[in-house]
Length: 327
Image (cartoon, rainbow, N blue to C red):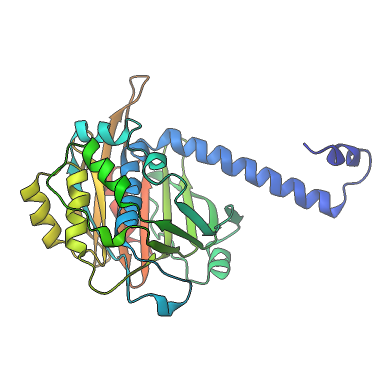
């Protein structure tokens, strides 16, 4: 703790001291909570390749843009979610260090707007006032869950520079030699905008659920980009053969769909309906290093211009019941 805090112990604490101490305790609690979440969320490391694929797609898909809306020739937002099963061998290849995020994009990510730390507030209404959208809450809390904390983070923006040579290195490392990478994207920059995010946590002694909500991320593309062709490259990286990758790439609406890789040996997925909207349910079951079996699930869906994610170590039935009660 800062020495000036110690000097203040001999007298009545000043208002500034009280505020600083409270802020520090909140930050420490948030760090501790994140560590608890990591221990309780068995699907987190296995779904990490979803972020890998999303960033890789950004590296190869998006054009040079500026902050002005005029720079975007083809705006779109993520509204749908679909999953693809990935073999254990390919998951290992993606996670063995050769294809981690640092080696893929290195210093080619520039933070334009840092979302900053999480801010804990007393209610969903206060989070909504801070983020500018109406925050929905679940009307049903199954399995004895109780509302715990509400927090929000600010908007974020990042630019990523496309690197065709690096993408080709990835393909070579995976022994994929029958796809072509468009050279026209090399050196271009993408601008990925994420709106503020609100997280509501629900807890019991042994169970946890987190509801996250935000406006759909905003991405821009130039006219004429062949999304299906680039999506096919991403599917090949995930381990699909040439025929299946091409078939699936042609069937997905890449302008509104996020692809979630799911490990074939530890997870399953299915399309669901959440309050009349299409959604995706992913369940994960893993054995930890200490031999314990842990299970978890996540439901992803959208409604209007909002996207939602509800995850926890509840049963799939309880998680879906909770998701369908969000209002």
